[in-house]
Structure formats: structure tokens, C-alpha cells
Amino acid sequence: MLSDQELLRYSRQILLAQVDIDGQLRLKDSRVLIVGLGGLGSPVALYLAAAGVGELHLADFDTVDLTNLQRQVLHDTDSVGLSKVDSALKRLHAINPEIRLVAHRSALDEDSLAAAVQAVDLVLDCTDNFSTREAVNAACVTSGKPLVSGAAIRLEGQLSVFDPRRPESPCYHCLYGHGSDAELTCSEAGVVGPLVGLVGSLQALEALKLLAGFGEPMVGRLLLIDAAGSRFRELRVKRDPGCSVCGQHDA
Image (cartoon, rainbow, N blue to C red; front, side, top):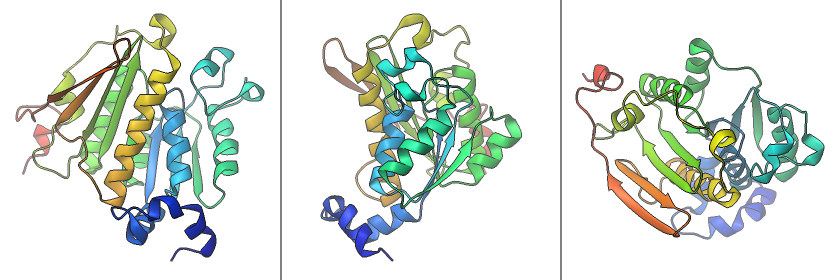
């Protein structure tokens, strides 16, 4: 049940017919893994905590650097030098002491990543390198857990949802194949702060839709964002029956 305090805290989204009490209870009962607490993970963590997602698992092995503060709004100047997870714990607890927070301060290897994914209902990939995204995707496919994936660099952003519970859904590998480990990161190519805030906010919205059970999640669709021209474009993405990641899980 929701306490009087929770009813008041979440009243504005409970007013939505698409959410209501039942949707808020589903959020309260949900467990979510956020991989990466940087530019994308910041708005994701802030909005999911504020919305009342009952248990947030926070994974990041990095520390807060001064160069992060231009876009990673989860952290502040006093957090420089601290673990990003510890910085996030403090901020999120201040925003919503009603939720539970689980810390993963070390880099997740294959076994620990598999266990972390298995322990939650949904995963948000907020990282900035291809190898980690591939590993997270594979763990989600194996565990049958939905994955909300976002990316932002320079003045371009992308967003999609991969849900192995739906037979028609592609996975991250269907879309990007083997990619390239030579892909640039924000520290090399740069990025404008509001863009990562936009993509991360959309990731949080997709997560809430999946968890509370409303709207149309972006399964089978890829959103492309051109920040320079303030333009949005959507592409349809089909599942690859020969995919080396999700294809092998067909019955």
C-alpha cells in the first residue's frame, strides 16, 4: 500500500489516468539497474528516484571529476574526487528517502553483471562505450529483462528500447552489430550538456512506461536527435533472426 506521505509525494503523477494508484504501486514494487552515473545516468537516476521507483541499483566504478560537472547534474563541486556511486547515494537519498538504493562501486565483470541484471526488473544502459553496451545487452537477453538504451555525443543523440520478452523486439546487437571499440567518447569528441539531459530524461520516461504499464515504449524504434537543428527522426528497427546474441535464445 501507499502511505499518506507517498500519496502526497506522488500525487501529480497519480492524477494521470495512465498511472493512477495501481501504476504507482507497480513503480514502488520495481527494481531497476542503472549502469553508468554520468551525463545520461544523472537525469535517469534523479527522475526515477523522484517518481518513486522502489529500488534503484546504481553501478559505476568511476569517481567524480571537475570536467563531469558541465553535464552530470547528479553530482556537484563538493563531490569531486568521490565515487560517483557515493555521490549519487547522497543526492538520491536527499531527493527521496522512501526508496531503497543498492550500490555497485566496482566494475561489473561477466558474472557480476549477470547477477546484477537478474536481480532487477529493468536495466538502463547509460554508459559511453560499445563493449559495455554489448555486455549489458547480452546479459539482458539471457535474463529476459528489458533494456532502455541511450547515447549522446557532440550534438547527436539516440534512444531505443529492447525487450526480449516480446518476440518481435530486436536487441542492441541486431541494430549495431559488432560496432567498433574505436568509437569516440565525450572526453574525446565533446558533448553539449542539455543533450545528455534530454536523452537521459527520455530514458527515464521509457522506463516509467515499461514499469507502470502505460503508453507505447520505443520497442522496434530508434529515435535520432539532432540537437543543432532541434530535429527528431524515428527509424523502424527489425529483429535480426540470425543475430548472434538474441537469435540463439529462440525456442
